[in-house]
Image 1 (cartoon, rainbow, N blue to C red):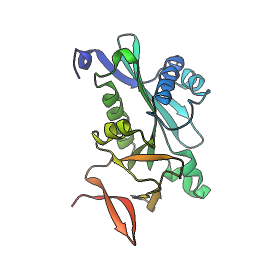
Image 2 (image 1 turned 90 degrees about the vertical axis):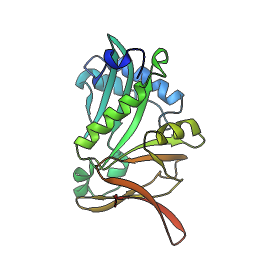
Image 3 (image 1 turned 45 degrees about the horizontal axis):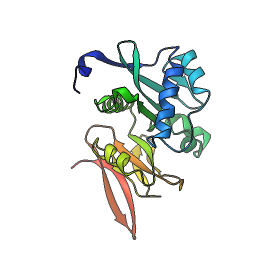
Image 4 (image 1 turned 180 degrees about the horizontal axis):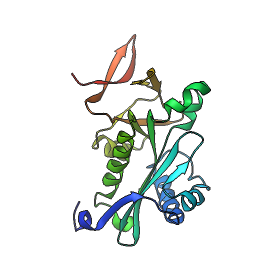
Length: 215
């Protein structure tokens, strides 16, 4: 980072009262195609104002990290367990899957502070939080045709899955997989645990991404 940002910026969980600023930045992410299709949940601001950066969800917690420069909220990242994916599993398995995957749902930096590495620092902080919690993979949904966003994630160690290409990974209870759900976006995926890499394999004419130990 440059221009003194590395010494003046602090990244931490959002505090109660940060909801409006966080959601306003999240709306910028939606408008700029950085986040998944859809809109910022209207209840997110109230949830952050009430609970701070750890937001209760039906399974696990969403986490909102804020980048501050002095008293200014310069950027935010909001991550969440993939609730729909979890709910596709039998109820008895859901609690054990909460930490398997982390979705980067919103990532945004205020315009005056862009180009200074703040988004990269926020992403790295979110990854480290998820890694420490035992998550296997981080992923972001990238809209079809958002090539600049794909390049941005690739430079930070992510692999872009083809549409409907499954991502296979091991959990404590066995192998699991996820994909884009045929919803007009790609998954940008990164293995989080040390020594694990993503490799593309072809089987019976179809490809898949497999998270496996680096030989």
